[in-house]
Structures are given as structure tokens and as C-alpha cells.
Figure 1: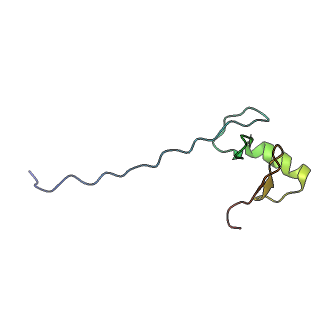
Figure 2 (figure 1 turned 90 degrees about the vertical axis):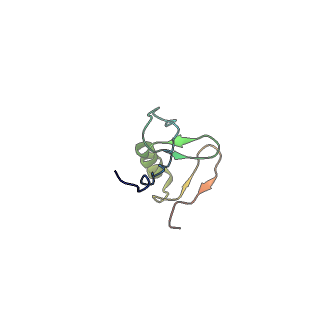
Figure 3 (figure 1 turned 90 degrees about the horizontal axis):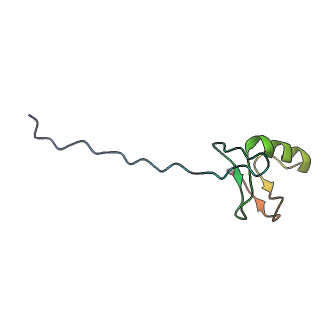
Length: 73
């Protein structure tokens, strides 16, 4: 028998829950979400970006017109 203590256990971070896409209703693993409750999946966001001529990281919420700055900016 060993007198050493039990190995430390790792704590897992809880999974982030994303709201379902408002446009298509898909419950995907990731949605672009705004504080106002608006959320788009990646496919619908790509279509939205083509119409609004935004770049791939910064976007404007169509509901409340809040500007969102993506990571690394």
C-alpha cells in the first residue's frame, strides 16, 4: 500500500451555452450573440456579413444597432 495522498483532481470549466439562431432556429455549438438577445449561427452570420459589408470579426446587431468588436482588435 502507498501512503501518498490521492492525485489532485482537475476542475473542468462549465461549457458555455449559446442561444439558438434566431434566423434559422438551429441550436449549433456557437452563435454570434448580442446583449439584446439577438443571435445568429455562423452560416446566417456569413449571409448577413455579405449584405452589410462588415468584416469577419466586427459586426453590428441588426436589432439594436450595437457595434461588436471581435477578438484581437
